[in-house]
Image 1 (cartoon, one colour):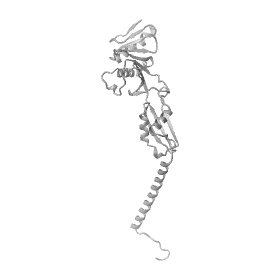
Image 2 (cartoon, rainbow, N blue to C red):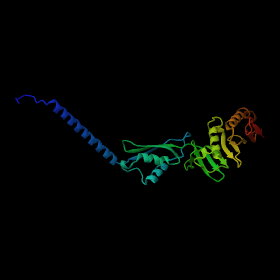
Image 3 (cartoon, rainbow, N blue to C red):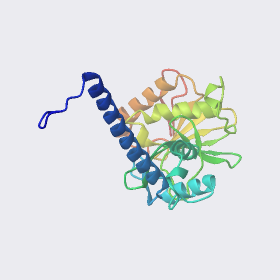
Length: 265
């Protein structure tokens, strides 16, 4: 080859060298990624950050310590200090969602090796106190919740002759606990009646009495039939009659009979 002449590759060789170059670059990139992942998995959990959504009233039946204890009881160890390889996010979420106070749990590990837990608690809407000294909450889906050692939820209370909790109680054709739950939901969705009603009572025959927060009277409701109409009549009575008669005027108000509201002194 004459001095100063340029060396040129044929097109086929050029294409082959380009492919080899890209392949080498890809392999180098892959090795870097694998090494970074291995180093990440081998690093340890620096912290567990727990965020529990408050209930609508701003309180909570669940504390961070409850979440940590549930994790430690299920896994057999604390997450802090464990390698990231030990963290099974899906199992962690399932463990938490099996807790009676937790409706939903989301877990992730951030770039700083912090395990972030976002907890949505169950919201109790009804407290059950029956004649057999069973006491618990029902949430918005009818799921049983135990009482909390941290806070007593200020919710509607049902007492009296009630059956034991059965997770399929809402599927029963006739069930007093089902009646109590459905009646509680009707009351709670009424912005006027909800803050006025304190207690639902079932006697041994299944007859219902409502106990309001104001006044000294009780409300004879009868059986759980035509419930929406009975509540409608009760609301009209509260709005139109009691402002003139006063909340102390009656010992009992009855909406048990169709089309009537009866005040008894």
